[in-house]
Structure formats: C-alpha cells, structure tokens
Length: 306
Image: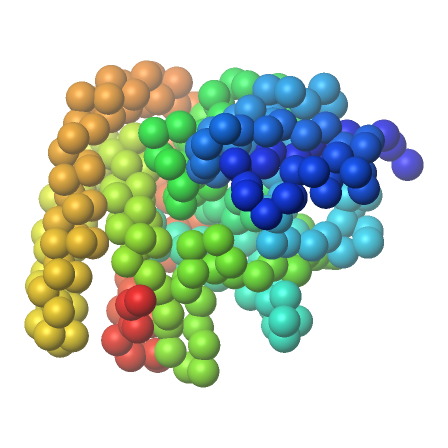
C-alpha cells in the first residue's frame, strides 16, 4: 500500500463541520475558509497544499469503493505518463451505473459512457478525478473565475488539447449523490430535474470551454450556432413553461457572462491554442455527433426547473 494524505477544505460552514473534523480526524489536514469560495478555488487550494505525486479530487457527496485508490494508482503507474483518470460512477441511493466517464456532443453536453471496454473518454466528473500533481500544475488547475460547474469539463478538454489522455477505468467505482450541492442534474421518476442556478452556470461555463479549447476553424463555425441555439432554446422553454423569467435568469444571464469575460477569454484562448499538441481531429475523437439535449428531450420530455 502507499501513503495517503487527506486534505479537507471547509467553505465557511456554520454547522460545526470544521470542529467535527478536528475532533474526530486529527490526522486530516483542514483548510478553513472565511467565505464560501466555491469548487474551483477550494480544489486549487487543496492541490497547492498537497505533497504527494498524485491528486484525487473527491466530492463530499461521493464515496469510494474499497479498492478504488489501489485501482487508480496501479492504472496511473501502468500508463507511465501523466493522464486524468476516473472510475465508474454509481448512484448513491440505487446503485445504478450512471457512467464510466463521458463523451460529449458538439455543444459540450456530457453523454454518459456505459461501455466498460472504452477507456478513452472526453471527460470525467470532478466528483472523482485522479491526476498527477505535475500535470495539474502544467494545466494550471481550475480557472477560479468559473466559480463552479463545468470546471471538470474544462480540465479534461484542456488536457486533451495538450496531448494528454483522459480515461475512465472499467473497474472498481464510486457512489455519488448527484446534485447534492447544486440540486437537480439528474433524472427522477423519468423526468430530468435541474435548478436555475445549475443551468445558468452550466450553459455559461460550457460556452467558456468551447471558446477556450475548440480548435480553429471548427470553433468559428460552432460558436455562433451554439449561441443561436441557446437563444432558441431559452425562448422555447420560457414559452412552454409560461415563465419568461427563465429566459432572463438562465439564457440571457449565460450570454451576459460570456460577453463580460470576452477579454479574458480571448487572451486565454490564444495561450491554450499555442500550446496545442493534439490534432483537431484527435481532439474530437471522443465526441458524439448527436446533440444530447435532443435525446434527453425525446426520452424525458421538458425538464423540470426549480
């Protein structure tokens, strides 16, 4: 077995969580924040503090299978070069297999992979994400201006753009209470449930990732189409729900966020594209051509937005 260092970031909790960790788990390194800084900042702080060769980002609503760490460590050693890894994700309550990593569609919507024979994927969930610290530092960690949602998509696309592998192993696994932090993001009783906040951050941050990582000229073709379809989707959803605040709260807010960050995005894109070591066709090799939102609409109907 190998030594393990456990680091916990407390996001200004008020329920005694930090004191509980200090009392019950004195060996755990606890980083306490005076404010809720969000997923990106918290993980960047913990990664900076970590002393090991590898990092495992693990959500507070996720639980590893007993052999998960040894499986990840062995796979990382066998690969022999830096990579991003994860394990099969199972629903915490039902035990249902949710995905073995994800492909993504052209508009960066995750498409669950359930084929255990396929290891190379477009992205793995940040709820359980294994990466060498050297690769984390090379990629620069999570962009803190993302806030939360989509940072795992960014890191995986960023890694693949730089020529590194993103793999989901078909062994072991972890259980995850999906939507525990932001609510929604899952199917309940046949209907997709989400929240305004989750949907807003998701649409905005997927747009960020497209701007930053899509190779030219595909980026030049897909971004205008992506933004046009978002507007159409927002108008249609608001009309069907007879709630026009959905358009302003989610879709208009997402587009405003993209516009307000345009200067930073242009500069950051130039930097990332200069460091690209994967051809544009290889970059899209883990993509699914069918728009996944259309599939979800046909299967589950109009989503419930809380």
